[in-house]
Image (tube, rainbow, N blue to C red):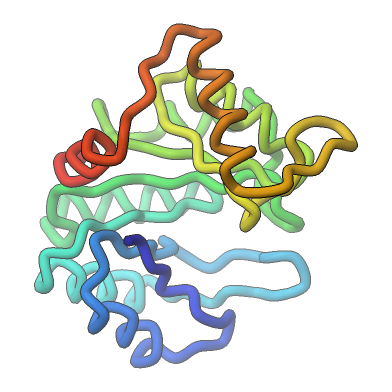
Length: 193
């Protein structure tokens, strides 16, 4: 189970920290502030560090969410300083209103900034979800799909369930020769990111 420390754009650090008391398998922690549509997520560097430290103390896998390039640099600094403990995963979110573009050039730029052999996922918001899914698979990463990001299977075709979106990602993976992890394999991958 993955929970997010983004419970509301204006939530206090203490409220965000309460998510960790639920002891999820993974916790998503944005590595900085971001424009999210009509809202602004305020996440100071001190707050990021405090949340990452709290996750490490509880042995919760940290998902360092990167909405732009500066967030990757923050995450790398947390790893280099020993604040973020392994396993760590990186997640990119592309195409959100006010965020980075959801195209392959932007995704490649973000991936190039990662530490060598980093475990990473990418999600495309809205119509670009399929493109980002395909790009992540082609570049050695892992796609994140679901209604949270997009309900579109393809242009003007809406999925009836999250399972439809997962099947779309499986179809793309099969087409390019990527193995698809089962539940137990996925847990093992995340535990050793």
